[in-house]
Amino acid sequence: MGLIGLGIGRTMPWSLGIPMIDDNVSNKNLPAFFAGINFVRILGPVCGFLIGSFCSSFYYTLKAPPGLTAKDPTWIGAWWMGYLFIGLILIVPSITLYFFPTR
Image 1 (tube, rainbow, N blue to C red):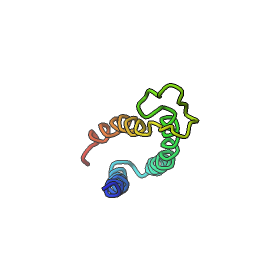
Image 2: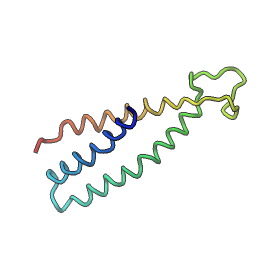
Image 3: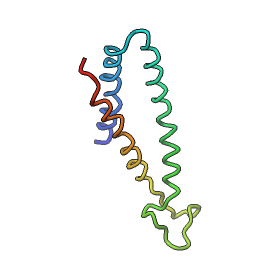
């Protein structure tokens, strides 16, 4: 199921987003928009690793037991916080895309 969701999430911007930009942006500005899309595509994993590293510095229950530090081998980071953070951030572009013109 996870790979199906990943496939849908990775194909939609390319199969729907690129043609929409091509139809609604002048040919003069098109290269800048395509460059911006590729820049964000490269920047995404970098930000993901940084957010994952930051979130893993917190204990998974947000309150570590006394005496347990991040250097302890039994430490479990709050990896799930990254999904919440990214999900909240993605609401803004989703709402913005909703208001794009139909043609």
